[in-house]
Amino acid sequence: MRLIIFSDSADLVTSVLPVVIVLNHAEPARCGDLPPVLPSIQYIDLRWVEFSSSWLRSLFSTLLTLDHEVQCIITRCYITSTVEGSDRETELISTNIRTGFNNTFYAQHCLLFRKSLHGFGEALHGLNIKWLRINVEYAILNRSDFVVFLYKSLPSLSSLEKLDVCVDDISPDLCDDLHSLSIKSVTLSQRGGWRGLIVNHVSQLSQVLISPTQMETIIIDVNAHPDLLEALCGRNINSLCLFGSGEHLEVKNVSALCRSLSSLKQLDKLDVIVNNDTPGLWQALHGLNIKSLSLSGGKTGLIVNHVSALAQLLASLIHLETLSIKVSKYNLCLWEAIHGLNIKCLSLCNLGQLDHISSLSQSLASLTNLETLCVKSPCGGVPRLLETVCGLNITCLSIGLSIEASDTCQQLWEALIGLNIQSLSMSGFLHMRKNIQEEHTISPSLSSLSQLQMLTLYVSHFDDIQLPQSLKYLNIYWCDEEYDFPLSDIVGMLSACTQRIEIKLECGVTFTESIEGYKIEIETLKNVKMTRFLIYTWKPSIENGSDWCVQKVVVGVDGNHDDDIGDDKLYKQFIDDVADLHRISVRFRIN
Image (tube, rainbow, N blue to C red; front, side, top):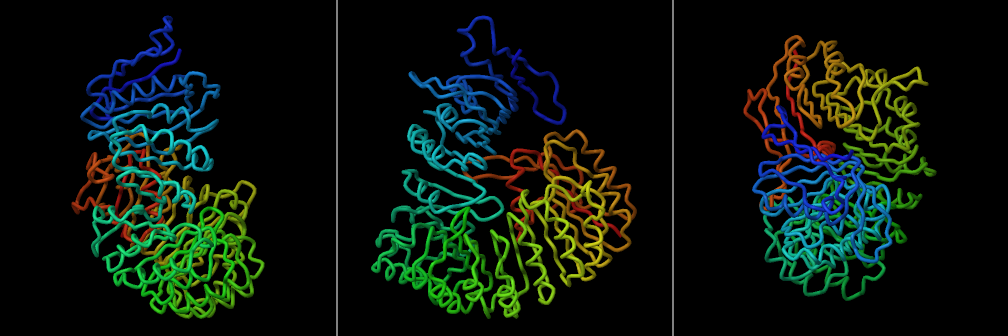
């Protein structure tokens, strides 16, 4: 028997009587009817249920009329199309839906196991939604399906004022698809990265609040109409993103783009997301006073055909401090292009096998002001890169590996041994525990880092590790819905510490029954001073975009409820990843 469980409770921690509604009733005519929704309903859980897109649309329509937020968990459910003559197969979908007052609708982690977004798009058809936020972590892998969803489903949302799309990676094609939509406000964000507001018309500039404290990036097409480029001139813009096709950049646009960019005296950060480059594109960016430059081209990376022009551009940016590069292929000329720059932070993404390791080593050695190195790799390039780090004077190292690269972890641990770094961030690992087939763990590597003062880990499993005596700050971000937060392992590790350490623990959990147990377990540590123990829930809001709201204060000694994210990119990514969960936030120190 297939069931929907409606938990009619104001407090998820003390959930009581559920209301059960049978879907596969003996009378077929009643199966498509809207199930009775209690006025105070806050949580709906649908698991392994088959329903039509019209039934789901009716449910969403009712939830949008309520004056409070409702969370609807859909786990591996089947959606059938109700369009006449449709021969599409049933879709298998998992997602986390939040509806809120003021007609907000948020779809978190939309996973499509089979077929397209067609049925889900039908379920949204014609709804009275003002603000729609979609996290398309997996659906975006099939871009054609997502494009069909954009152009077929969204036009039916006549009340839609704001669209917010969050993805793992941002490509020029995705920017172009969103750029062509006729919606008042379209925001594109990247998990753990930045968020930007797409501007495709002069009239939209008047709606954009541009100030020195502006947090959002302005996103425009590199081939934007000259009128828009002219309207940008002199604006107080801090962060700008250029997207599109570099090879189509006309000569007249190069001049217009150059004039516009050079007039932005407050411009501090520039992102360039293009499929390919031209000398004209790099010429338009020449001599800017920016401090941060990011070059990418989506998931596969930017194709650099004019390395010499890029090298001239980089040399002209005398105030540049941070450079991020994500290209489809790292070649010898590219390493020569970064040679001798006065940058403080270098980020390299999509590292492959690094065939030109000697050239890279020479270029890195020439960066005499380099303090921070960030590397991300889908394969085994990181260990080889770290071989070149030993002779550098960097103080901060950030490492991100994909799941496919997990078999290179042992090489990575060995490459870490003895580095003279003060801050280490690690993410993208399946776990931090000993491999069953390996005799070694990460502990010897960490304990050998005699200068390490800050360690940040974003993991989904945890086991005991040995911390160096020099460590002063430990940040642990943990997210795994299938397992309980491993606080016992963390407490056991910290109990062996003899130095004073400031601890920040953040975890995403489905339920919060064990909160008091977590608090007591931490207090069993000797000489513990707990300054914060909060439980957050994420609240979508048409006015504020989204907010983490304090659901419960277990310990609030310092009264500080802020996230204190700062420049911690791993924390930003963690915050995005747990938006459909409860978040436990703990601050304490030992000794």
